[in-house]
Image 1 (cartoon, rainbow, N blue to C red):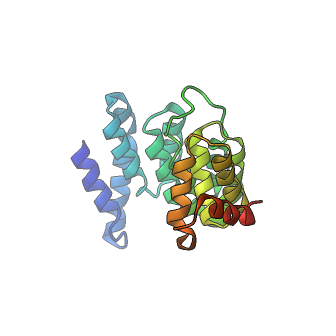
Image 2: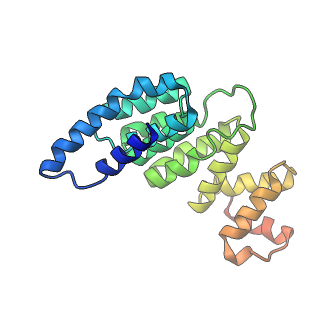
Length: 205
């Protein structure tokens, strides 16, 4: 099954003009028809590979399947990434809302930690209001730190404010965020903590 998915994925990412269009259409139909079987197998790696292959499927039903995977916790992290690859603006608000979804279980879970970066890469400035909501309202630690990173890279004050709070409040992610900002902004790479705080506060909202 994995081998078939790799082959179909490769086929769908090649030229679809002329005779290739008909072959691609049949390949897409085969992939969509396989969804139920993939879920029943219950193999996380296979489900993740399948979600990746759906990223090459142009049929609108692929988007519905990916969202179904998200709702049912099937390859959820990979499915969300693939949805962002499609860059459909109709998905942005729905994706953004996940950043502030009610917390359940371990607040240190990392399932959504890559979503902030994926959102900004896919949607640019349009994603920033959702990232600002995430850094303020999410209960998940790694969602907040992920949103803060993207906001700093975008020059938004809330990202800098978050790092100021991390340093002054001695948060558990203080060293992580301090290292991030040093690595991201060469001019403060060798700054002391005091100098770093002055720099951050000048840019904080």
